[in-house]
Length: 89
Image (tube, rainbow, N blue to C red; front, side, top):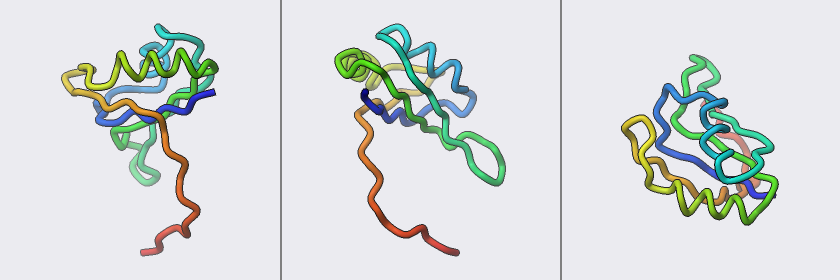
């Protein structure tokens, strides 16, 4: 399984569109567009999990820098989050 970060997404992209974009390269187990907790508005990035790592690498190579809705999206393997405490405001 490969977890993929997708950045610089148009704010109008939803999870179904993200899943469809990556499904051209193989089986997508999940697709999530991250949204602001307070407003519900997209933050412009998301994550896709693909069952097959080779298919995921093909998707990364093909889609990184490609145009989606007038924006050049960033696509790369997601890095694990650091174990750090949440910031409080």
